Image 1 (spheres, rainbow, N blue to C red):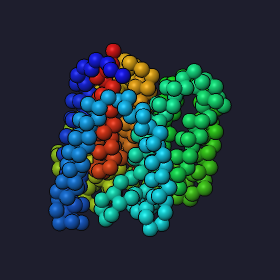
Image 2 (spheres, rainbow, N blue to C red):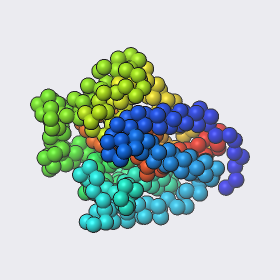
Image 3 (cartoon, helix red, strand yellow):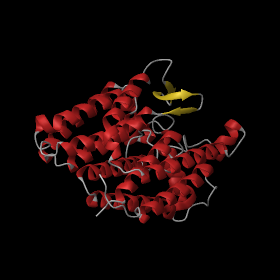
Image 4 (tube, one colour):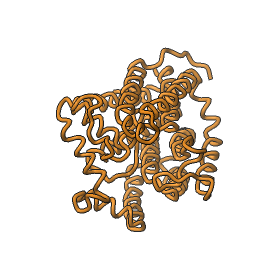
Length: 365
């Protein structure tokens, strides 16, 4: 398939690099105290993040210049490999337990998170499947059930780790792809009601999830337990005001706020850079999502359009959940802020996916 290529979307590139630069600055600021305490090197986390950012940028430029329809050939194999990794990570002694979830594969502090790879593999496969079956997607049994069955299997494996946050992002992004492909709203609405019932069941089946819900509804009912993270996050955001306390001047990163460099880095942004700093990051994400959706609407074929929607969906859903948790509007789920939070496999893979999105923009009409 030969098509004339143009330059990639400049707005998208600028927003990606600005978010990434702000992320590296904030990873250092949020983690310096913790890194010095744990490793005697205040640059420990930012050095590793910079390494993965460099790898991710290299991967982004490769995928930005590799024609996106090549990925259609590898979509099925990629999904099978990711399913295999999700099974392997559940094996005791093989999968590494971090934060109470057996969701990592690796040695020592270096590792990969198979659920991160599954997010991209799932939207890639769904874009291929639904672009080839677009005439059937309005049928519940022939068009909608097969992709939902695949999605449900992946969801189940991720929940066995358990990792509700990654599972929620994958499901949210995939459902956006399915809806965009032309699925009937009433079918998805009926399934959504079943999903809500299932989610309630999952919450009731695990006492720690129920505690998170009660901690979200009333953090002060257990200020040293389930409500601790939300309370400390709000303690960080409140003093930030309009312009913040100043870069590096956070108080909550002194062992008060858990995971200040990962899940709750946006709280440190709000504390140090204030409302204006937090709003700037959200604005940059809004530009990225806007240009991504513009790329999806102008893509030359349905596969490129659905794949662009899926990649944008991963970013949008993850930002929505992370910021919602940090400001106390959603229960704690353990979701990082894309391109900003510390995390090697997540950062590298997301930049790779954004390279694919940029390549699709090169063919936009």
